[in-house]
Image (cartoon, rainbow, N blue to C red):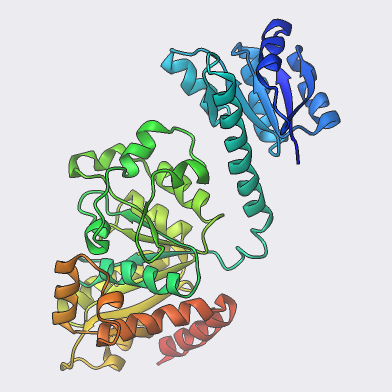
Length: 392
């Protein structure tokens, strides 16, 4: 199938581009020299790519119109640009690809074919969003306090979901002290910091260039390597990354900061499911009560699942926890320190190293429940329990 290309710019620039695009896989379907008629020409020719050799304000307005009104036609700017502010203005119009006008013909054609393949996959993912990606869930793993096993659950849950043939990505949104990379045992150079510094307008294809891959098949986006850069990332940027990735992945698992800040509020708003992890001692339960109250005020309780982490036989019974918190315990992860510490020291997920351990089996059970979950049914069950609990 030929890649259809529309040229936009001066007659001279379009003619020069046409001489470079001599390939059996490429076909030029038209040339536009008047920006006002570009949408009509797109309607007439249905191009896959629009090569724009003009960076005037009129041309940039055309780029924005193309991005908003004709999303199936991908604008690509071909120009010699050394002005950083101009590049930023171009990208703000929705253009994700800027190529050097001095590029050799073979390199140019190879780049265009790569862009076409990337965008074709993106559009296919969008078209399947209501079918194959309808199970797509954003799972926020949250703990009101450190030390409850939040990150261990996030990483190992991701691995188990990937073993069940799901496409899974983990976002390390503990921007100061995130340890997803360490728990997966993967040294990384690219983090969320490099992503937002290099790309002001992200899409799934751009983000995937900054993801790291674990041997289990789990992709992950690491937190910044230095805590001092945590404030360089805005909540809006964090939200855009989640929105872009949920189109492609079955599960986007977010391991966020323990406690509440603007990032936490953003993640709570984006989440399909919130795994609220707490321990069963008195101080932890006091924090859990406060945390549940905040989350329920922000989003309602329907998508919250309460998990007891590091559970051990103690004086506090499960029914007392549910009564004090006015919330049902959804699942528990037993205290089994030796395999957890060994797996952490080895830099390997516990469910891979010790799948038959108590923790490994518990996380496998949680993953199985989530993978089978019908949110409507589960929500209605939880609603009935919660209302009865309040009456008691």
